[in-house]
Image (cartoon, rainbow, N blue to C red; front, side, top):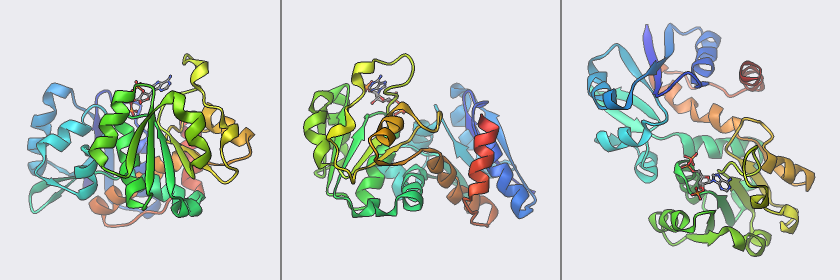
Length: 274
Ligand code: ATR
C-alpha cells in the first residue's frame, strides 16, 4: 500500500484528507492519505526521516511550508520562486519539494475564466505568504504589469522587489486610481470579513466591465469581496478550485494517476466542509 500524508500544526482543519480520500476511492487505488500533526520543533527531524519511512510523500501546510523550503536541496522551479514547499515526494531516496499553489491558482482560472490569460495588468490585494504563489503564477501567465497593493506598503514593496520589474508596490489609498486599468484582481486578504475594518473594502464601481475578480479564500465560498464584485455584475471565480487543483500534481506523483477535478468532487468538499 502506498501511503501519503498532510503535515502541519495544528492539522485538524485540513481538507486535503477528504480530497485525496475521494480520489483514492474513486480510482480504486491501494493507498492511504492521512493527517499528521508535527510540532514545529520536530519538523526538521520529520523531514530527515522521511526517505526511510513508510511514506511515498505528502503535503506540507502551515506553519511548515517555509521550513521545508529551507531544508531541502531538491526543489522545483515554483518552490524556488515562491520560497515555500507544499508537496513532498521521494526520488532515488532523495526528498524533493515542490509548490503546486501557483499551478492550482492558474488551473482554477483556466477552468472558470479561461480568458484571464489575455489580460495584461493584474492587481494583487495583500502581500502575505499566500500572495507569493499568486504573483509567480501571474508572471508565468505572461502578465506585463502586476500591481501589488497592501495595507502595509513596505510588505508590498518587499514582494515587488523580489519578483522583479513587472511588479510594482502601491498603497491602499491608490486603489481608485489603479482599478480602472486592471484586467484581473486577486484578493489574498480578509477584507470585508467579520471583524475587519469596513472602510478597507474597495469600491469596485470604478472597474472596467471586463475585469475578472477572484479570491483565494474559499470559506465562505462567496467572500464579501466576491459578493461586492457579483453585485457590480463582474465575472468572479471563487477560491475552492485552487484548493482542488493544487492537489492534482501531488496525487499523480505519489500514486501514478492524474486525478480529475470534477463538479462531483467540488460538491462533496463543499458539503463536507459546511
Ligand atoms: P497569508 O499567508 O494568508 O497571505 P499573512 O501573511 O498573514 O497571511 O498576510 C495576510 C495579508 O492580508 C497581508 O497582506 C495583510 O496586510 P498587512 O501586510 O498590512 O498585515 C492583509 N490583511 C489582513 N487583514 C486585512 C484587512 N482587514 N484589510 C486589509 N488587508 C488585510
